[in-house]
Image (cartoon, rainbow, N blue to C red):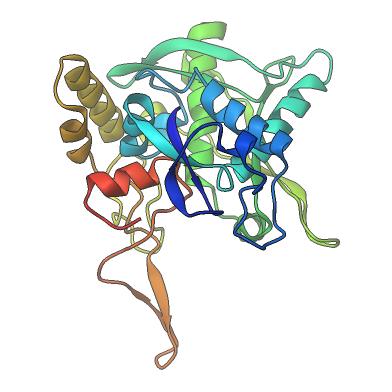
Length: 312
């Protein structure tokens, strides 16, 4: 991620220099407010945000092809305005992943970097969180806010699959089969487990495992990330289409086509999905005519909206 300047709540400016917090004692908080970040936290957040060289350079990875291609292209090709307060949750997840890797059970694989392997019409790669010593279980850690954790747990109790999480684990399964075990993916049938964790109040569920179903390569390619389960097809772009968008856009940018022009033509996958409001009179959920919300926090949001002529 390339950061050109910082947004800070202390002055609500987007052109603060990268050494803003070394020169200011604001703690990234609004004036007079107590919710300050410590300088050590801020430095760590910025270091992690700028230090990710893996998810960069047009690389197709398991997580990227399950996300918004416009976000990926912006973070690969443009300098962004960064908000350290919004990066705090991501940093917490990174720190927890790092700690779990450092304290991995002897004999297991706390991280496997899967070399590029054929997937659909392209080659992709990925990094697992944990694989058992006998390769019979693949786990992926997911860290959430308390609200999101509660939502995930309710879905789990109802027996609802996490589509994107299941697809991610199956991409790892297929990659391990092709690149490491050298067997046909349909012959490799490990348990696939998402481990959901969060810092919650006493008595709430802070961690739970959710086993995910096996998916074929064709099923993963046909998945529409962030789609609305109540109205399938609300998000029309499949994983296969997202991969094609990323490949075509990266090729065009490398050929010298204007970066902003290329990115504007790539859809915001995930926007206008889950955009509902509660009608108090009818006591029913109603879809808004025009969505104004993306499905997750996005570091590229400010640059993305500016390219689209929208208000951040």
